[in-house]
Length: 185
Image (cartoon, rainbow, N blue to C red; front, side):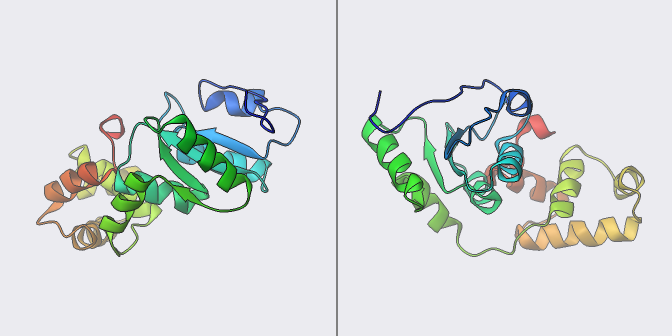
């Protein structure tokens, strides 16, 4: 209902993105960070492959530090929570369509509070999921076809990066920071 904006598709899951993506080239996607089947981060990757020029605004109920960081790192141009008002939503859409970034004030504050932190690699995140499930280094190594020593090195790196006391504390910290979610465990 906003002049200059036209909704070309509404999808209820990430899986529908592959099946129902319109033939026209949308210039903006609104994507939820958490969906029942495919994560918002994975949706960003799919969109980036199919529509490299498209801009992406994450719109979600969650404003966890790591969710914001991961969405922006994956290619989102903005991040806004669902409780944002209509005016803020339109402002975010306009800024992003103009090639700028937009973070709601609350989200921007959380990102500032995050501060500099060594980036957790994709492999470390994969290992962190197993750690959170209570798997031993041996079990993780067997699952990923890597040595126990390599797993141990990754776990030690995670403990240092998360400033944790031990592997359990690292898993708890990852949940608090939004690196992992209960459905990941």
